[in-house]
Image 1 (tube, rainbow, N blue to C red):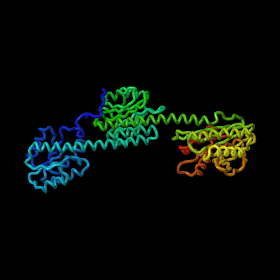
Image 2: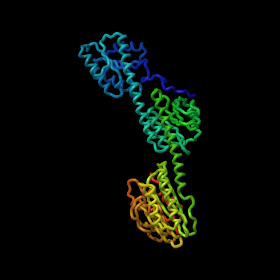
Image 3: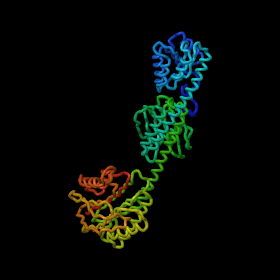
Image 4: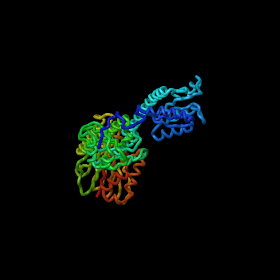
Length: 551
């Protein structure tokens, strides 16, 4: 059985919301006086607590606040056997649990102007002289209640709004769907001060439930079938429409759907869908923890914020997939096939970038030699990828015209400075003869290739030169020889750069990793995968990797 929850009506007696009968603490050392005042209050429908000393009064007031049923008004005699009513009032007003509790002083002896002034100065909200008429006492009580209840409602509203702001910050800071599920459940628990659960269905196979079984504990996640969100939608009147709603569901009906620990009683469910045909985003708390209209509105707003965040993850996933497809379209679709060499390539996009990068590799047959290259255009953008495409196609064109690596880089640099001023790129170009192993190499600011020999030694091929985009003199081609069964590794800086680490340290890690274990070295594709796995690099940067082995 579900019940639509309007964010305005209280579900039961609540001291924050009620304008009806109150809980009144009567403090007087005279039993007869406590009885008379108590009888007036009870006939008016109020609940009465009694204390005959100041210490008892404080124990009763603080205990009631700790149990969630605070005293609404304290009527305190000024003359008490263990302390003065003034001191009791000061203690109540100085404690956060009872600071908003109105205190009415009553006295038959401390009746001078200075006595009354002292009582009011020390925190009392009213000061009555005994004997008191019942109508005056009840009218004073009602006046004090109007002020205290308005203050409590305002304080409660501020508390809920501040917790909603905290929850919204958690949602907006979530970098993954797992963090988002935790943020929504944690935010719901902060607002309700109770157990909570969130239900999100993001892109791919990512439908999950996050449960906080007790306020203040760590959330726990579990995958759920996507069909669960259809069931949650049937609890509400939302259907397939967009928007947000809240309902109260019986524990029995809830447990038939989900064995959540928060369902020891009725459950408050808030849900939002931002686009039609999308799974809704939902959160749940115990119904008795969401009785106030402020909490109902805040939980509904949190569900809306979570749904928008899920949609942002969906948009990001689509953009990332499109960017990755576009990036790969710029890379060679076919690699040279030869009995003399094996080639393996890998490309890993930046994990937190939806834009495409400028990393690229090239491998193409030019007559009886192989043109092999690696490069990186500065930046992550469509513009950087466009420059990368131009450089790669220019590289092929100049090589097809018979130019050597140093001349290829000169022409690429002229092209870049003429048509893309203020842009820079690093490129390493090699012309490799697979029959002899001769490598003619020219490097424009790129990281040096690494050679791994068959006997497990590794060294870099160092040949420097300024990066492309600068009008500086360039060295000529440098010649090397790749031994038989040796492997040549070309890579971009994302493989070896790590935050807080020197680049030289990263290059040494790469060298050490290639010689660490002989098992990955036996298969070129396995070596490429091993290096990507073992060397985390900078996940904010793309990685292009080309491995060539002379067989």
